[in-house]
Length: 232
Image (tube, rainbow, N blue to C red; front, side, top):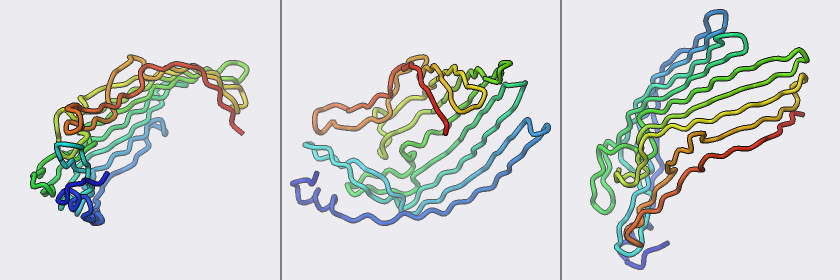
């Protein structure tokens, strides 16, 4: 949508620059206890020049989102993943990321200063885990039980860091029970996604200029079903 206002249209038509990333990372990978434990970790630092970001342009008629450049932005983080065979047939996995993101220098075209804001869609903490148990029958077939979870910290959906255009921290849980034949080429399983029926948003859009409200996109509620997989 191109604004009918000449000044606003000029901002919309202003070309944006390419973004440049200088990335630093140091980490390690390890296998121990007769390869029953694998642990990998890394510390990283991402230094952005002209980071491309979406910014809301208020018009008091229709909301306009433009793609602009933040002069400088940084992300400092730690990420890890671990997998452990803790008992016969039982495997536990855990992975996570801890990040501190910031728009170091960003003056929006309309004059707002967003320097110091968190980069959109970059939660400080994300953690996920899986517990998987494989029980083999005398026939060689297997009954496989799996439970997983994912945690995501508070995050903003907008460069403006509007607390309404955001999502509070939440955790989701999935479960699965399957049967795999002895040859391992087919499997039937029952599953439940979002087991606790957690309600959360995957996006929020500021449409106050249009209708005085916010448009929210919600994640799928609890889902359950049966699936069949065949491997060629």
